[in-house]
Amino acid sequence: MSPASSLSATSSPMDRVNDGHPLHYSWVFWFMHRSPGSKITNYEGQMKKIATFSTIEEFWAVYSHINRPHDLPAISDYHLFKHGVRPMWEDAANIQGGKWIVRVKKGLASRYWENLVMAIIGDQFDVQDEICGAVLSIRNSEDIISVWNKTSANGRINLKIRDTIKKVLSLPNDTTMEYKSHNVALRDNSSFRNTDVFR
View 1 (cartoon, rainbow, N blue to C red):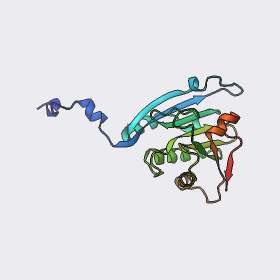
View 2 (cartoon, rainbow, N blue to C red; view 1 turned 90 degrees about the vertical axis):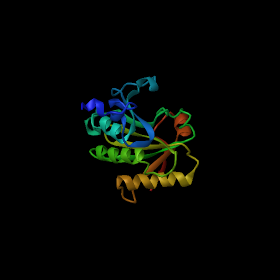
View 3 (cartoon, rainbow, N blue to C red; view 1 turned 90 degrees about the horizontal axis):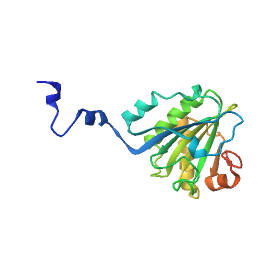
View 4 (tube, rainbow, N blue to C red; view 1 turned 180 degrees about the vertical axis):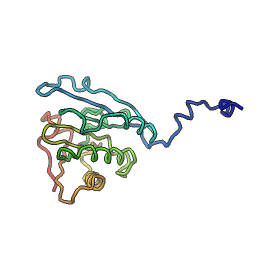
Protein backbone atom coordinates (compact mmCIF):
# COMPACT_ATOMS: atom_id res chain seq x y z
CA MET A 1 0.00 0.00 0.00
CA SER A 2 1.46 3.38 -0.95
CA PRO A 3 1.55 6.25 1.57
CA ALA A 4 -0.87 8.21 -0.62
CA SER A 5 -3.46 5.45 -0.53
CA SER A 6 -3.70 5.72 3.26
CA LEU A 7 -5.21 9.22 2.90
CA SER A 8 -8.97 9.41 2.96
CA ALA A 9 -10.80 10.70 -0.09
CA THR A 10 -11.70 13.91 1.76
CA SER A 11 -8.22 14.82 3.00
CA SER A 12 -5.10 15.93 1.24
CA PRO A 13 -1.47 16.17 2.30
CA MET A 14 -1.92 19.97 2.53
CA ASP A 15 -4.78 19.48 4.98
CA ARG A 16 -2.42 17.54 7.20
CA VAL A 17 0.24 20.25 6.94
CA ASN A 18 -2.32 22.88 7.95
CA ASP A 19 -3.64 20.82 10.85
CA GLY A 20 -2.41 22.13 14.14
CA HIS A 21 -3.37 23.66 17.43
CA PRO A 22 -5.58 26.66 16.60
CA LEU A 23 -5.13 29.96 18.39
CA HIS A 24 -8.18 31.90 19.57
CA TYR A 25 -7.38 34.64 17.02
CA SER A 26 -5.33 34.91 13.85
CA TRP A 27 -2.35 37.25 14.19
CA VAL A 28 -0.08 39.21 11.86
CA PHE A 29 3.59 40.13 12.33
CA TRP A 30 4.64 43.46 10.81
CA PHE A 31 8.04 45.17 10.55
CA MET A 32 9.08 48.77 10.05
CA HIS A 33 12.49 50.46 9.88
CA ARG A 34 13.54 54.00 9.18
CA SER A 35 16.99 55.43 8.78
CA PRO A 36 18.19 57.73 11.59
CA GLY A 37 17.21 61.32 10.89
CA SER A 38 14.62 60.44 8.26
CA LYS A 39 10.93 61.29 8.64
CA ILE A 40 8.11 58.92 7.83
CA THR A 41 5.51 60.64 5.68
CA ASN A 42 3.45 57.54 4.91
CA TYR A 43 3.37 55.44 8.08
CA GLU A 44 1.12 52.72 6.69
CA GLY A 45 3.20 52.51 3.51
CA GLN A 46 6.36 51.91 5.55
CA MET A 47 4.88 48.85 7.28
CA LYS A 48 5.90 45.49 5.87
CA LYS A 49 3.66 42.53 6.58
CA ILE A 50 5.83 39.55 7.52
CA ALA A 51 3.26 36.78 7.95
CA THR A 52 -0.16 35.78 9.25
CA PHE A 53 -0.61 32.77 11.52
CA SER A 54 -3.53 31.11 13.27
CA THR A 55 -2.03 27.98 14.86
CA ILE A 56 0.80 27.34 17.30
CA GLU A 57 2.68 25.47 14.59
CA GLU A 58 2.37 28.36 12.11
CA PHE A 59 3.56 30.78 14.80
CA TRP A 60 6.76 28.80 15.42
CA ALA A 61 7.33 28.37 11.68
CA VAL A 62 7.27 32.16 11.33
CA TYR A 63 8.93 33.13 14.60
CA SER A 64 11.89 30.80 14.17
CA HIS A 65 12.79 32.53 10.89
CA ILE A 66 12.58 36.20 11.85
CA ASN A 67 15.44 38.18 13.36
CA ARG A 68 15.56 38.44 17.11
CA PRO A 69 15.16 41.97 18.48
CA HIS A 70 18.85 42.19 19.50
CA ASP A 71 19.77 41.67 15.81
CA LEU A 72 17.61 44.55 14.53
CA PRO A 73 19.06 47.94 13.61
CA ALA A 74 18.09 50.97 15.70
CA ILE A 75 14.78 52.63 14.90
CA SER A 76 13.09 49.37 13.96
CA ASP A 77 9.72 48.11 15.11
CA TYR A 78 8.05 44.73 15.29
CA HIS A 79 4.27 44.76 15.47
CA LEU A 80 2.05 41.82 16.40
CA PHE A 81 -1.64 42.56 15.80
CA LYS A 82 -4.84 40.65 15.41
CA HIS A 83 -5.65 39.85 11.81
CA GLY A 84 -7.79 42.68 10.46
CA VAL A 85 -6.41 45.30 12.88
CA ARG A 86 -3.87 47.69 11.39
CA PRO A 87 -1.09 48.73 13.81
CA MET A 88 -2.16 52.37 13.64
CA TRP A 89 -3.84 54.70 16.15
CA GLU A 90 -6.57 55.50 13.61
CA ASP A 91 -7.72 51.91 13.07
CA ALA A 92 -11.33 51.38 14.18
CA ALA A 93 -10.25 48.75 16.73
CA ASN A 94 -7.61 51.08 18.21
CA ILE A 95 -9.04 54.59 18.06
CA GLN A 96 -10.82 54.44 21.45
CA GLY A 97 -7.98 52.55 23.07
CA GLY A 98 -4.48 53.13 24.26
CA LYS A 99 -1.28 51.35 25.17
CA TRP A 100 0.79 50.33 28.14
CA ILE A 101 4.46 51.22 27.73
CA VAL A 102 7.49 49.55 29.32
CA ARG A 103 10.93 51.05 28.72
CA VAL A 104 13.54 48.31 28.63
CA LYS A 105 17.31 48.39 29.09
CA LYS A 106 19.29 47.38 26.05
CA GLY A 107 19.91 43.64 25.95
CA LEU A 108 16.59 42.57 27.51
CA ALA A 109 14.18 43.09 24.62
CA SER A 110 14.55 39.68 22.96
CA ARG A 111 13.51 37.72 26.05
CA TYR A 112 10.75 40.16 27.04
CA TRP A 113 9.32 40.28 23.52
CA GLU A 114 9.20 36.50 23.18
CA ASN A 115 7.49 36.11 26.56
CA LEU A 116 4.98 38.83 25.73
CA VAL A 117 4.17 37.48 22.27
CA MET A 118 3.52 34.00 23.63
CA ALA A 119 1.32 35.41 26.41
CA ILE A 120 -0.73 37.44 23.92
CA ILE A 121 -1.32 34.70 21.36
CA GLY A 122 -1.94 32.24 24.22
CA ASP A 123 -4.71 34.44 25.69
CA GLN A 124 -2.95 34.79 29.06
CA PHE A 125 -4.30 38.32 29.52
CA ASP A 126 -7.84 36.99 30.12
CA VAL A 127 -9.53 40.25 29.06
CA GLN A 128 -11.68 38.83 26.25
CA ASP A 129 -11.04 40.70 22.98
CA GLU A 130 -9.53 43.79 24.62
CA ILE A 131 -5.94 43.18 23.43
CA CYS A 132 -5.37 44.55 19.89
CA GLY A 133 -1.67 43.88 19.65
CA ALA A 134 1.83 44.75 20.80
CA VAL A 135 4.79 46.71 19.49
CA LEU A 136 8.51 46.40 20.14
CA SER A 137 10.45 49.57 19.31
CA ILE A 138 14.23 49.22 19.06
CA ARG A 139 15.88 52.56 19.76
CA ASN A 140 19.43 53.78 20.33
CA SER A 141 19.50 54.16 24.12
CA GLU A 142 16.60 51.91 25.17
CA ASP A 143 13.97 49.60 23.75
CA ILE A 144 10.24 50.08 24.28
CA ILE A 145 7.54 47.45 24.53
CA SER A 146 3.90 48.46 24.32
CA VAL A 147 0.64 46.54 24.55
CA TRP A 148 -2.33 48.08 22.74
CA ASN A 149 -5.90 47.68 23.98
CA LYS A 150 -9.33 48.65 22.64
CA THR A 151 -10.78 50.72 25.49
CA SER A 152 -8.69 53.35 27.24
CA ALA A 153 -11.64 54.42 29.44
CA ASN A 154 -11.98 51.04 31.19
CA GLY A 155 -9.74 51.45 34.24
CA ARG A 156 -10.39 47.98 35.66
CA ILE A 157 -9.42 46.25 32.41
CA ASN A 158 -6.41 48.54 31.95
CA LEU A 159 -5.04 47.71 35.40
CA LYS A 160 -5.55 44.00 34.75
CA ILE A 161 -3.54 44.35 31.52
CA ARG A 162 -0.80 46.24 33.38
CA ASP A 163 -0.61 43.58 36.08
CA THR A 164 -0.50 40.79 33.50
CA ILE A 165 2.37 42.50 31.67
CA LYS A 166 4.30 42.69 34.95
CA LYS A 167 3.61 39.02 35.64
CA VAL A 168 4.47 37.79 32.13
CA LEU A 169 7.72 39.77 32.02
CA SER A 170 8.56 39.05 35.69
CA LEU A 171 8.89 42.78 36.35
CA PRO A 172 9.42 44.01 39.93
CA ASN A 173 6.30 45.47 41.57
CA ASP A 174 7.86 48.94 41.65
CA THR A 175 8.54 49.00 37.89
CA THR A 176 7.47 52.28 36.31
CA MET A 177 4.93 51.79 33.54
CA GLU A 178 3.23 54.36 31.35
CA TYR A 179 -0.15 54.52 29.66
CA LYS A 180 -1.17 56.69 26.73
CA SER A 181 -4.50 56.83 24.95
CA HIS A 182 -4.42 56.86 21.16
CA ASN A 183 -6.59 60.00 21.12
CA VAL A 184 -3.84 61.85 22.99
CA ALA A 185 -1.23 60.36 20.64
CA LEU A 186 -3.19 61.67 17.65
CA ARG A 187 -3.40 65.14 19.21
CA ASP A 188 0.30 65.45 20.05
CA ASN A 189 1.54 63.25 17.18
CA SER A 190 3.76 61.29 19.54
CA SER A 191 3.95 57.68 20.64
CA PHE A 192 5.88 58.06 23.87
CA ARG A 193 5.61 61.70 25.09
CA ASN A 194 2.94 63.02 27.50
CA THR A 195 2.14 59.64 29.01
CA ASP A 196 0.44 58.87 32.33
CA VAL A 197 3.06 57.35 34.64
CA PHE A 198 2.22 54.52 37.05
CA ARG A 199 4.63 53.37 39.76
